[in-house]
Image (cartoon, rainbow, N blue to C red; front, side):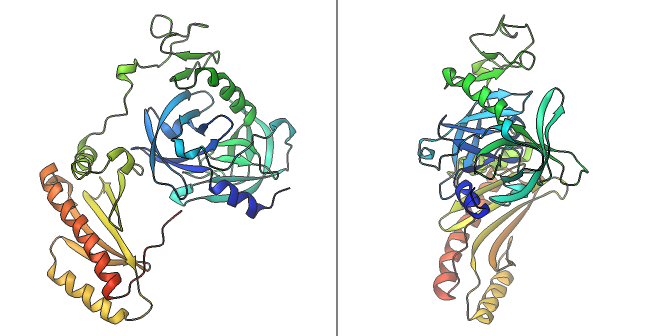
Length: 368
């Protein structure tokens, strides 16, 4: 048996964060298959998603397998993921009610969280598919992460929770996952959709009459290759991504969920969010942490800067010093946004250096 602490330490380095323009979720890397596994609902209909692995830079990964019925998706990982810890698939059939399990993921954006629980029902059937019912909490952001047994083996893919249920979560057993992995391996590199009726793996070249499963005739939602693009962004999100691109940042990598983006400028980390309910685009540049001494002098400096600045504001979020700007959504254009964002990015980088050198502020503690 592996201790919970050992299990968490191992999986922290093989569980990935997945972000798209519509949300965030979890996935995990299987070295034996050189595949990242997650839920179909996490990737949506996106061709590419961003992956973040602990102690590695964010990268783009191509989605190559879609299985709507079992809510599975596979991603081709970047080459530098090949050295991640090896995870093994366990035998679902060996599991029984009452066994201890651990759900690992990124609930509510909290990185690398693990929740221990027990199996309430090992073979709960929902819409003709068996699921492992567990009392370990599966929250938004956990979806697509591994369910792990006491031996440190993956026994399920955390998939959904019943709203209003008290820690009532469900994971897809690994027998379904292994079947899909083995089925996809001969087609590695191609985009494939699994037929929801007969489980036949369909590619663009095997579609019957361009839209039907060649085995059972079920209509398959499989766009042509030239049409298989990411879901288009529009409105304010499109404007923000155009601004980021003009400033030299890849908007796909910057995406951090629905109407959220994150970029690094020098040593400053800048988080951008748009909430249509309050009509404002908020850009928060996280600069550094409060110093051990001389805080009164630092506060005096920050207050004086706030008095002299227009359109920007220093504040504290916990121990972090943040430089923020606010833009009314009706005022935003690409050209105006370029001016505002560019000024904020430059100010953030310069203020970061000044605060650490002159006031002995400390570097931000990075989330791993």
